[in-house]
Image 1 (cartoon, each protein chain N blue to C red):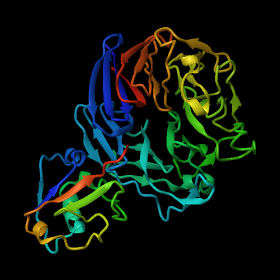
Image 2 (cartoon, chains in turn cyan, orange; image 1 turned 30 degrees about the vertical axis):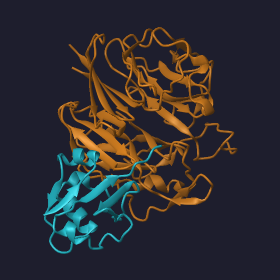
Image 3 (tube, chains in turn brown, cyan; image 1 turned 135 degrees about the vertical axis):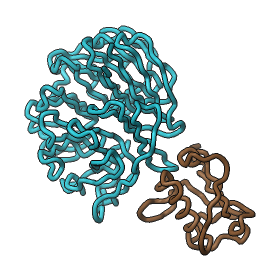
Image 4 (cartoon, chains in turn red, purple; image 1 turned 180 degrees about the vertical axis):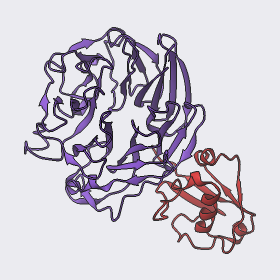
Length: 98
Length: 371
């Protein structure tokens, strides 16, 4: 079971509390996790990445195992600890605003 | 007894204010969509408990929540606003061409003729329609073909902010864009024409006959006279008596030539309301006095309405979608400020009182008169 931590506003949109658990068939990547996340929670479509281009929204970041995967190709494999559910993928709304 | 529901969009959520027909005691419900910018909310005139909201965020993009119970509960509908084909480019601030990019929905306008149809105005400016209550959206791209390459954003972005539907003709729609101007379709959006003749924008547009590029802030009409429109432009208040074919200035004795919202009395088609703001560079009421101006003659002759409004040290703004009227026998007028106040008048503007004082900055105010 893959674990995903959403920021508060996305938890509200998805109507979940705490972490989200997802089953991912095949290689575990940011793209695969977002595909599964959006399939389960359609309200998140467009809120993390562009609906057409799949490009990450500018103020969204992806972290796992204390590493920033925001700029890595979305199909890149995530660490084994994420694939095994020992560590979550953290989707973060960047601090901005001054 | 009739009642009134006031839909308030703010920088940090939505609020629903309700009162009976006396409009003396108000209930404030909210925030809905807390922390999100709510650019606009509006109810269907055919099904008043069907409400739509534009919930938007620089972080998380666009959501369109819909309520079918007057705002008690909300469910998201489709948020996919895709430009048709290759979007192309428009003029950027520096004069170069810039790709069309969807940013948010500024305005939602449920149809007067079909309960499932709703229109949406986007930034970057485009006109969308849903025929299934918001479950899917389609752009009507002919609008952007009207010299769209010459459209240029204003300081607040290139938003399609006004949508006016003709009660007598379901095919006729007026829209306005900052800073492209006003446009009209007579065939339900299949084709459009710019309706900006008579507008004078000498500092930004030296050509007085320029078809596009005018900074229209808001337009309005009275349902009984859909060929007569009133406009608050970046400079001047104007009217047209022929569906926008030609405009004439009716600023008259207004204390400034600048402002954002404009509204028409529910029962007096020649009674018009504006909120003059001091110049385009300061954006607050002149002399620190918050005054609504009313003309009972369709413009040119204006009177200041001040009773109940702050007349000293007031430096709020009133944004373009933040004024509306109810349709009770004694017409109610409402507006919200960037200081978070929503003011109401139950006597056509003669006297005012705040409904609520300390909301986040108000972006939009719409009023529903309920049986």
